[in-house]
Image 1 (cartoon, helix red, strand yellow):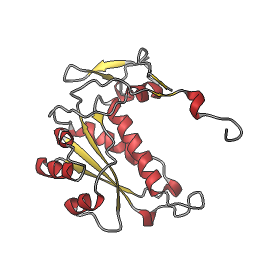
Image 2 (cartoon, one colour):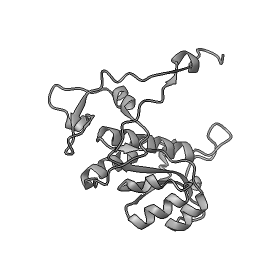
Image 3 (cartoon, helix red, strand yellow):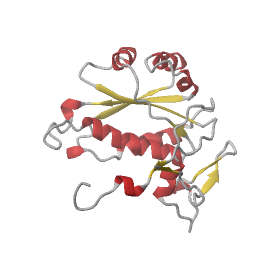
Image 4 (tube, one colour):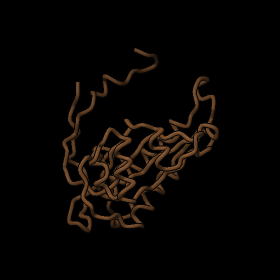
Length: 205
């Protein structure tokens, strides 16, 4: 069963474009507060973007959030390629099942992981690099939401084509592509399972 996400308590401000967005902690005036759960509620997968450029200081703040993410043994086995070149963005859409709307965003972030630098025995059976990079990307996406920007996690792509376009070494893995920009749509929440469906206590049930 899916339930809608309640947005009634989200604290918002207005960005330079005159649009409402969830408050950034650094933008709050004295006495104002905002909870991380409200930021999480505000996040949406955006598939239409305005061509408005992203200010460099805003972009660096978003990228900096990924840098602060935790990772197994603090290995930080990641690198993020910031693609702003219009021709390259269009070529990347060809590696993502021709999702041309991705190129509308002023930035596409390509997330890369380094298996050789990550914990090779997480849980006794797997390499941690994909989990580590996913945590960093989640930090980046929530930071972007805080800044009034939209994102969409692109996981369906042809890795070899992405690697060829961006000259990524063979021992590096591509985990996701994230278009980043000001949203040109207001999608409704897709809903989520009820908490009782995904939580159990003391043993699996």
